[in-house]
Length: 288
Length: 259
Image (cartoon, rainbow over all chains, first blue to last red):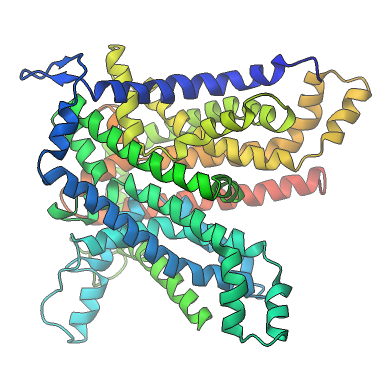
């Protein structure tokens, strides 16, 4: 097969053409457009100027949405870690014959429509949702608690969406750890907790960091949960882009915000790849 | 402790989903608790809603064509990555999987901007090529993972026995790869069927998909009809992979026993 160097290229060409034409070139367009001008009549004028970026950082309004996005992303990563590590550890430890079934359940949400999962929280958190209904029924409160249309509700929706990614990433990492290592530590005098902290936890860090990166990146680009579960103050950067592009048709400014978002994510992914290697994530994604 | 916590996480994860299905049967007008009996009236109403049925048809057609196209170009690429060595392999592999890491909004803006620059109107074709780009990385990941597990010896044996490369692919590789191709198609279909964010950018009034329709309906708060539609979607999208898994196991069991 050695003298057929053209063969892999022939096999690759359809995919490469598609990704090049439909992703690489359009993304370059976004970057180019971010330097263009928008005339008062709404025409896009080719130019090279930083006005769109200046507009973004002009006052605190737009940067605050960016900061809001980052804060929500960090909170989501943190909660995903807490909520995700323990079930993953449970799967690692358990000898239960229900384990395959429980694993399938974790992956089940991947198959359930994202928008349905997001809006399902309205039935739980809304004024006449499950929680308020139960609280009123048992006379804990008299009038419904406002739990919807705030940051907490947005994070609920995000967690619902992202937790399976985190659990799987951590589990894949845990699964590769030889259980006898922790046993050895224990036989040398470690307590259960010490053995976990000194042996298992450090060895599972690749999965923890891969899951965190994935959750962070996906949260930064999220559009639906703030739209459906958030209030006016919970806008995130993707909502802003959508509003500028589809709403006011301000392509150059929308492109500039998109470029800022891409740059931010690229810096984060690049830094991550530098220290951890990006392949861990792909490994887990393909195992699902 | 760990068990209890895990249980709680499960409860937390599935309560909202169960609530959607339950409330779909609530005859009450507002689609909220308490349950006041069991009724199919929202499902009946749904089945008479022609815009939703249209959206459903759009979603099915779009998802199916996306799945076929995506696997048609993804499988050869996976073959190239696993079976051949060439310069820039790592880089190209990352490039083809990169769309996973690009936020959908950016993808949406980018492709729409490109189409606008080409002075083409939004169309079904735009939606289709967009969805192919969205799903390609997943197809690639799934098929690659499977290809690694298929021993090259089988193919080499066929070649040494006089089969040409094409025959080898059709007779040996393809049957062994079929489950992965099927899984890739299924996954591509689900992602396409499910996508909202990018689709909101690309869809025209005529080519709306079910999730986009639901998104539009949500503007006037949640209604029992949405819950009913949600219940239908949940049953549909959950039963499909389960059924596929069952079928492929049965199929594989009959044909080759074990690979």
